Image (cartoon, rainbow, N blue to C red; front, side, top):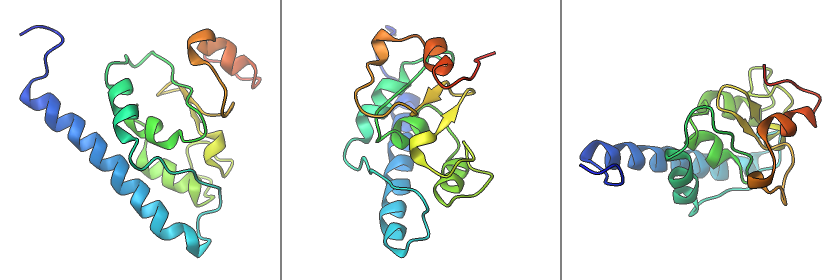
Length: 138
């Protein structure tokens, strides 16, 4: 099989990632009006395939720095759903511990959403991105 062809297991894995993101976003949309979620959210319902498609071909060491709709990319890159939800609820166990999706940042998944809209990830190295925040990648 050529490397650009998908096998049966690939379709299932991609579908599971799409489904996880969609269900998480639907749950956020359902809960958000209750004011239990402590951070602003920008849903990416209907755009899950972009995050899943891009992140599926990345290696673990590849960095991702999406715009303000970054929670889909965070999950597609292998980020923790539990940690992401804790972050939205303002819990200390959240992935960044600062109460906000705009600040999701995990070195394990090499993911950062600290710079918001307008970042051009193809023009900036991950190490440069983190040094702007005063953080180290080591």
